[in-house]
Amino acid sequence: MKQPIEFNGVKPIIDGITGVLVLFVVVGLPTVGWFYNNEVLPFWAAVVFGTLLMNLSFTAWHEPSHQNFSKFKWLNNTAGWIASIASIYPGYFARRREHLIHHRWAGDIVKDPVYPRIQSTFLSFPKVLVDSNRKFDFKNIPESFQPMTRGQHIADLVSNSLVAVLIISSIFFGFFKAVFWAWIMPRFFIFFIHAYFICYLPHAVVKGGYQVKRVRHARWFQRILSVEQNMHGIHHAWPWIPWHQYNNFISLNSDTTLKENIEMV
Image (tube, rainbow, N blue to C red):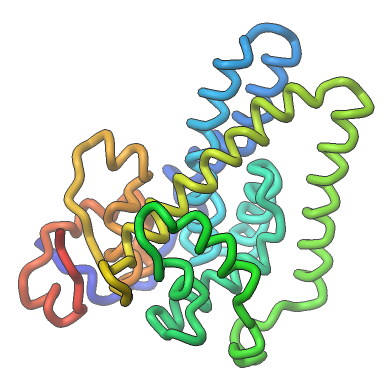
């Protein structure tokens, strides 16, 4: 099997599969809320469909952050920014920088923001995650690394404001229940699901430590649930590979896994 060692430099105008996924998030979540608000869907269906769509939200902003949505930087920025608003996870540019810091210093005790989050047991992880998010010091990161422009700071401020306006407006105009069941509750559930599947399971080591590149062989339903993030180690080794192609490279030969220090479990 061909090994994804080098990027051939060819990217599409828009990655079709990722484009459909982003569309599902951006259009699907408001649609579910609208159906619930107009009594087409019961609350439990709004929660279920909202959660299924929200499960795609990480990939919707994550692929653009690695320039895997399009060959055009402005399209990546636009898609990631809109997806972050639609999934009530605003602040795309700050989040992108944090994520790229994680890639640049993966496993670094001081500089990797993920490192302190996974120094926990499986059950204590949520508490440690919340605590470490508050305590991580970005002053340890060189200002020259992926510096945010003034326009990006403004864009994040606008996205934060839009989400706040949506929630406040829903209270005054009588559709808060739709926002709550279709967006807020799914966002709450998915925050912790993603934290386990994308942060803890790919990197955690029993009794402390850090595994940068780990690939988990999984059943089809686990792949769907994690949106292929069971193969998160493929992404860390070759971040230019789109999420829907990870499985093409899961049967890596022993020389490649040894060279890249990929743990196969």
